[in-house]
Image (cartoon, rainbow, N blue to C red; front, side):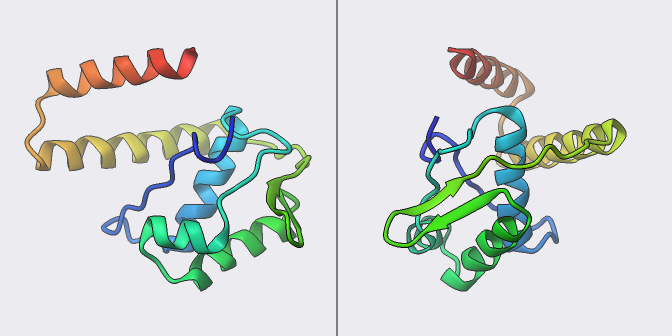
Length: 132
C-alpha cells in the first residue's frame, strides 16, 4: 500500500500539534500494516499543500520519524518507510488512543449533522473496503 492510500487528516480542534498528528498517523499506519517498509510517503511540499500547513511542520514530523528509525530519506528519490524497530505497545494506551480517535470522529460527524445510522453504514463500508 502506498502513502496515497494512507490518507492524512488534521483535527485542528484537538489541541495536538500538527507535526505530532502527522507523526501519530504514520506510526498508526505502520503498526496497522497500512504502510509497509519501502512504501514512499508524499514529499514534504506535497503533504504540506494537501494539509494546508507550512512545509516546515511536515519536515519536523518527517525528521523526528527519521531520527526514531521509522523513515529513511534518499536524496532525489523521496522519503520511505524503513525497516522500523519493533516498538512495544502498551495495550491500555493503545485502547485509550482508539477511544480518543473514535470520540473525536463521532463528535465531529454529529456536529455536521450525520446520524448514527449514517455513521455505522459508512464505517461498515470503509472496513469492507480496507479488508479487500
